[in-house]
Image (cartoon, rainbow, N blue to C red; front, side, top):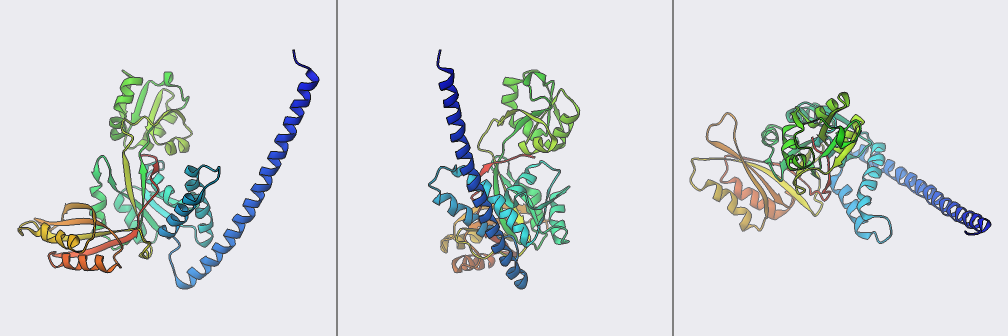
Length: 378
């Protein structure tokens, strides 16, 4: 057996070393707080200048480039993967000193759109859930919200047609985007797999987690709900019911996680666009979204519409077609391209394409997102 006195001396020395390290950490934390307050004072000055010029508070390009630069320059022990979340909240908190933004999204709380809005604007904003994608846009048009966040494209299911149809009806400019990877959780009151008697969720998450459910909960009843948020609410009332929903939905509902990342495909992502505010200036890494109408009956119209972009060296990232409401056999082509509309080559390509179209419009030029991250689903 060892010497008890020696053991006590070792324990005392260890406690003393821990106390010194914790004191040093506390000093660093106080220093960080002092620097955060310095940043806050500078942001307040920026806010005063913006108010004088009536400038928009939210600048997606500035915020993206800030975090990307810090991520690239990190050579210390702090996990680079955590920098984006930390500085998103720092930016959100200090942005609120300029103005606390109201953000409309497709509700209820805990949906994909809610998670996307929080990814774009952080905790220090007021979030306004609404019933439809059209309602998101209406809320911004009526100045009930400063910005709106709507889903536009999913890597598995394709474009969100309701969003494209709504965008053609509004004059709001696109000013940003955010991209999230879908990540489903199984949530319940107890958090125990053995307690699960029924699984509830929206039909899409149920299908996306089918193989996991077959392996881990064979024979357990699956029940469809209008949304994952509704499934989470049901799980809070029924002890034997587990919900497939987002981690955010579970957090808001006070549920425990039975299992995380239960989706069968890990590459499923959804892209959202942010609407409202002033048109963003070029950031050096932008997308431009356009809408052109052409007649289906015109032979070669689509080829002639797209050819100018190749001629002017403009890369197209997406082409989608939707029928134009109220005008039979006329179609709207939604085109996303790399670059900002203020660039001469983009302007020339757009103008040449417009010669083929019945009508056309720039929906917005905005900074490309670099925030692909594990997200929440709705």
